[in-house]
Length: 56
Image (cartoon, rainbow, N blue to C red; front, side):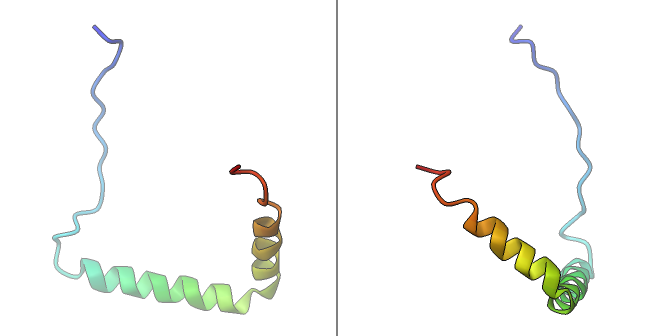
């Protein structure tokens, strides 16, 4: 009646054995890549500076 319909979304099972370990593994890979990419870090810092005044 409200114009809505159900949607099913499949997400990882956080109860599965090894889930937390896999999250840690992937997080470490991302952190290593971030540390190695100085240009990306500078770009992110510049982008954050550009947000001033947006949420007033």
